[in-house]
Image (cartoon, rainbow, N blue to C red; front, top):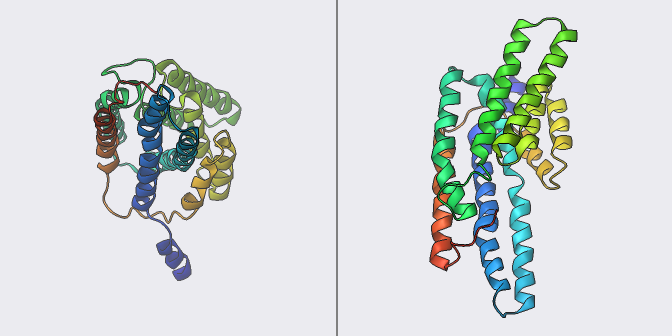
Length: 253
């Protein structure tokens, strides 16, 4: 028992995972919002092909590193859903910040104050939580697995369809990835394996399951609102950098 507790203390806390996700997300968005605009601007100017190719390689590296963030956020969402003391407040908080984040997201990636063509990952996470809630209600009320499985499949399909209709970041695949981690949550090695497999559509994303596998179960630092605030603020800052560079008018999605 003492060894198990000691091993858990050596692992990564929830706050450590959150910081890893935020840093890799920032790296990703530097490539996706700032560097890509500079590259698009270079195409309209006479410049060095070698310099363009080097910057494009850097862009691909930044985006590759950024693939690590979303699986970690999906995992932490599943953990948060299971651990929250007030699910309604958890959902409300996600919903409020999804609304707050929309303008910075639209500015950063479409150069518009409001754009319905593509919604932020905050809305994807909100749809994921609502889908987990629906599935948990079914699990609590239906004991017959022959009935539970098709009903659960219907809830998951509804969540995936909702993400597609809302045009959220990652769309139906984002909700599907969240649900795989939720359904397999009771067996850690199956959750890790299932997560790696479902994220194979993004080649570098399974790397995220190395730090996730080191998760100790501890909360760590109290950073409840850090991600919620960091998400819209870093998008707004990156857009302002693009404006300063003279590329803020170029949409990238």
